[in-house]
Length: 256
Length: 279
Ligand SMILES: Nc1ncnc2c1ncn2[C@@H]1O[C@H](COP(=O)(O)OP(=O)(O)OP(=O)(O)O)[C@@H](O)[C@H]1O
Ligand SMILES: [Mg+2]
Image (cartoon, rainbow over all chains, first blue to last red; front, side):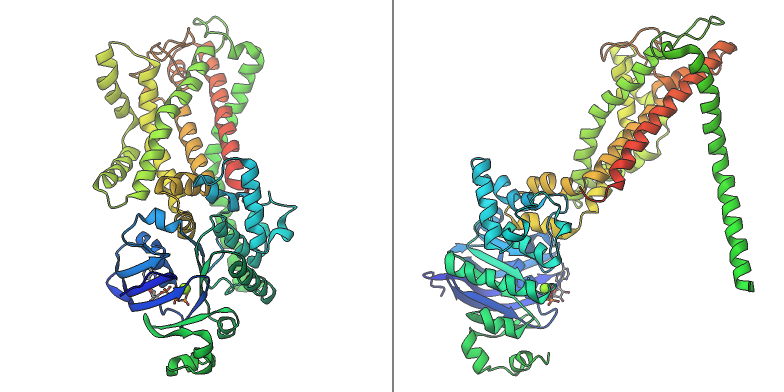
């Protein structure tokens, strides 16, 4: 049975159906605190759905059903109020989605403001700066915090979304291919940001990625999903050296 | 020029001529309102906006009570209608499967089609008769009923047009549903929402029929409270155009120009909202 100590994320027997279609099939895994899990798998295998099942954004999808257990820092996600459990987590989506009607500053400030996490403007300014620094974006935007986000490049927008998530100081950060639609320079910046997060904060990261190199470079654990099933899960070094499943081998070679 | 080019030229010419034919009557009305109205207003001077209407064959006077009535009615009916429309739209978008929300949708579509004179009669029956008097309030209620389906439909469309990913982003921040709707979605859709409100506002500026049995047509006193009798520019035009007196026809032309300019102002404001692409 699930042992709670030390794990940031524990998933047990997780199944997801959307409109009667079985999307996630009996996934189980656990990630210790302050580690980074890379989730890999071909397109349509259920990676994004897995993330949405962890923070219960899946609740927003009509005709969806979830079975199984998800614990985030010991909190039983499906037995708690979904709004409360989402506050434990941050999410960065597959395509950058900063709120288009808000300035760069407001995009980061909106979470803490609406969740009433700060007492005054100074505290909020401080927090916005902190989050933008953590997302490695501060230097690029500090002189134009009032600009709308569409003036930023795609990669900068994605880091803005990272800052927006970080401003709530999440314990678990869910990243859905944050470097997927981003140029290599920005991709490196995002990777650097993630590393420094793990170094400085009490945070655990689940990173969906298409790039085996990226997974090997920065993750501690790898989960490989194929058609909704977890076909391989373990320490990154072990899987990179000695993949058990032939699909993982192919994927790591870039053949799937 | 080959045959294809000639065909295209002919096609273009036909399209241009037909579209001119379609808009010409509109221009004609527009121009005659400006032409006739301008003459009247030049003659009457600024007093046209400040005086009460003339007696038959006794000069031009002004349309102050009707102008005030139109403005106050538009404001009052917006105060009644817009919040209701907002909530109806949010309800319909947020709870599409709720039977009550479905009812709201059907009702607002049905209200779109309802003849405006029937709305006037309805308010006459439910408000004027019980209260024993015409009133600005009754007029505003009738106008609000006219406005609600339009504004609701526009706001619904504006909210539905917000990409799902922003909704998800809002919920991912741990926000409650009302906060996602009112602090995120409404903000992103605000241009469409404001446009819808302005269109509702413009719509009631010109309405006549709903006011026939509700307002009382007191065009000699500026209404000071919601229970006072009142008048509107549209009613004044409607009545004066039917009198046999030349001076009253003139007043009607001048009033028509004033109303047209009010429309134009609202139109231009709403254009500003829709044209700006980002902040
Ligand atoms: N909202 C939805 N409605 C219907 N089906 C969905 C929905 N979201 C996901 N699915 C289905 O679930 C399956 C997994 O989709 P998911 O987006 O999780 O894959 P993915 O691994 O993230 O793919 P990609 O690498 O392309 O992002 C797909 O077959 C998809 O069609
Ligand atoms: Mg995906």
